[in-house]
Image 1: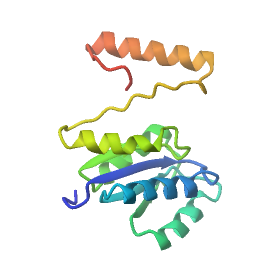
Image 2 (image 1 turned 180 degrees about the vertical axis):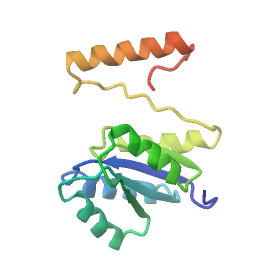
Image 3 (image 1 turned 90 degrees about the vertical axis):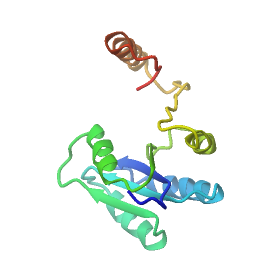
Image 4 (image 1 turned 60 degrees about the horizontal axis):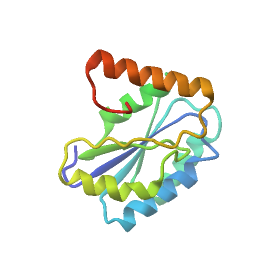
Length: 155
């Protein structure tokens, strides 16, 4: 961990050639405007499109970007584990390459981090979820809350 580096933005990717460049720019611009020291750590899960080439080009112009590539596809959760282990920031935030969050919420997370060890963001807009995905999500949340006495609404 680098004590001068406040935030690691973790972006696990697999075939995100359409999203990665704009996501990195939007995230980077927002954090610069918030005067936050940060790195953008992209974990590529062995993409077979142009994602890796785009990441390498982005790195030439933005020294805050680092990446690690899995040698074989290991699944979506592994990118988060790998990124957490390779993070250098005091705090880590996971942001999907499709920016499935309101990037303006970053200021609220950074403000909350001044007085907390952990900040949990809650995704409340699930309009893009199918009925089946909503059912699975609600069932998982209920099971975790019940089995582990967890008071949170999202995990």
